Structure formats: C-alpha cells, structure tokens
Image: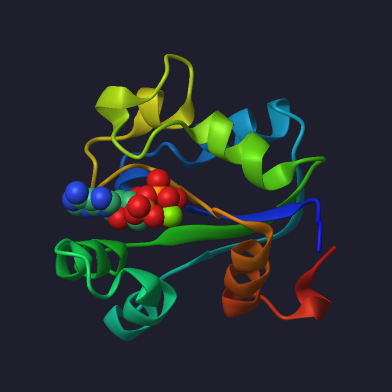
Length: 139
Ligand code: ATP
Ligand code: MG
C-alpha cells in the first residue's frame, strides 16, 4: 500500500556533535513536514530489536552498540514520495560515497556513524514509526 510517510532517526554522532538543529532545518527546507518527533535513547536491546533485520550482518554488534551509545531524535515525516525522497536527501550509507549537499555528506563521520537513518520502504516506515510512537502522538 502506498503511503507518504517515512521514519528517521538522527543518530548519536550527530546529536553529540550538535548537528540536530541543522539537520531538522534541512529536512523541513526540503519539504518534509514533521508528524511526530522525540529526543530519546535506545537501550542495547532496543537497538537489537530495531535493527533485527541486520542480525546476521558482520557489523551488527558495532551498529547496535553505537546506536545505544547516546541520544537520538526519532521522527515520522510526511511528503509525497517520502521514503525515496528522504533516501535521496540523506545520501549513500557511506558518507564518502554520498553526493555533495546530502545530509550524510555534510554531517556524517563514517559508514557506521552516518548521522541519520531513513526507512527503506513504506512497509518498514510504518513498522519503524510504530516502534517509537503510538498513533495519539502524531500531529
Ligand atoms: P539506515 O538503515 O540507517 O538508514 P542504510 O539503509 O543506508 O542506513 P543499511 O544497509 O540499512 O544502510 O545499514 C544500516 C546501518 O548499519 C547503516 O546506516 C550504518 O550505520 C551501519 N552499517 C552499514 N554498513 C556498515 C559497515 N560496513 N560497517 C559498519 N556499520 C555499517
Ligand atoms: Mg537501512
């Protein structure tokens, strides 16, 4: 089913480096509206559950420890073609490969500490949004 929503997290490297406001500005300036947002954190168990799809990948331990190492900002965003347009805005997973002007090119530190998450499908956007928010938190 088509939807116009995606889910994002500003990751611990970016919150820790003071990039949160600039990243939110960039998201809004590119036409996304915020449906829900919170400053929060993931426990190691939360990160393992959230990234369960990557459990067999060699970087799973590094990823889950990193994602639970500091605060994050979780948000549900709305725009036409939200999932694909947001992936375009954040750029490639490895900031060294991300196009100039993308959020990862400008704010990410490394392939692991890459500033932001963006859902990769409408289905995962719904699952990931529900992980962090109940429907009564949406505005
Ligand atoms: P995200 O799901 O966070 O938006 P992505 O879809 O671009 O990122 P995935 O393949 O889903 O990339 O990987 C999830 C996350 O795992 C990456 O964002 C990154 O933080 C981490 N990661 C991916 N590949 C590596 C790697 N080779 N080494 C370390 N960490 C990695
Ligand atoms: Mg992904």
